[in-house]
Amino acid sequence: MEYKHQNPMPKFASEGNQLRVGPTMPTLYASAPKHPVEKQSSAMFTLNQEKLDLQKLSVNFGSHMAARVVLERNILAGSRRQGAYGSSMFGLKSHMGKYQTIDFEDILNDPNESPFMDKETVHERCEKVYGM
Image 1 (cartoon, rainbow, N blue to C red):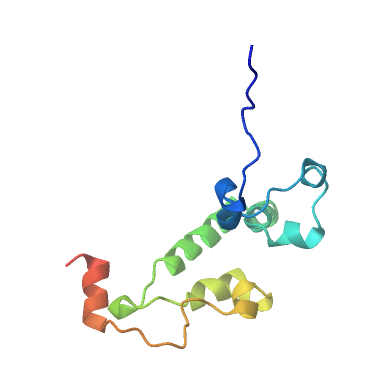
Image 2 (spheres, rainbow, N blue to C red):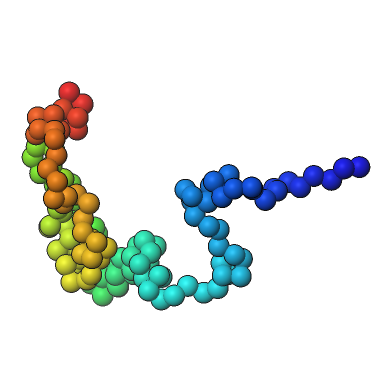
């Protein structure tokens, strides 16, 4: 009886998607606890923090206050700029207190604010966004 390995070692790094995905983390480090900065930068941390803030509001001021905050955020998130330009969401960010913290965009810049001008006009952008 001949035994064949299920996952043989690749000859080259490109065969194992090492170039696209990156190296896999050893199981020794995968089970290790995360650094506190890594925990705070994750999306789940901010989501849990917002839920905790809404729970505090509902306990301290009543459930109508948490519902009001969620309604205000939904209204502020729905506003857009004319001409299919990306919105900075200034009202929503200030309502959520994002200008008092340092985020990814503050350090590495927002990709929407590229210094290179787009080659498409405002009309072409509107046609693409609105499907005309």
